[in-house]
Length: 182
Image (cartoon, rainbow, N blue to C red):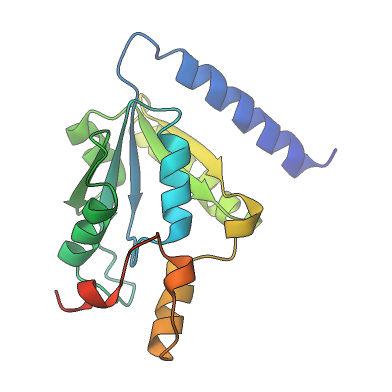
């Protein structure tokens, strides 16, 4: 067994114990990201999280270092449209540190989706920083199923920029053109 496999197993075991220890309180996770746009991969991670947590807040952040396709308001509207019939999902817009937003939202967990080893290394470093800033909030990694690993917001943006159709990478019933005007 290689070191990465051992580390993944440790995180999965730790995650199970941590989530199960919060049985007496509401298990609320925040899923932060730019979500530009919110893809089928993001939906898969959110849907997995809904099996573990009582509530999931999808927190749409703004990253000035990134080139954006949709306005933050359009991203919030898109995600709300996807989860309009699910009272256990809320969507907010935020700026600043994720841990400060978690404190405001009274979230116990930060949710992160992992597609590959590059994501894992980046997210593990962020987890350690967030833990040092706000020790009471745990970061939970959910691994993307293999058939969705290639889906990313940047791929969807590139397909759109080249006049392609990104529908198969988007949640069912979402037409991105509807959100481009905002």
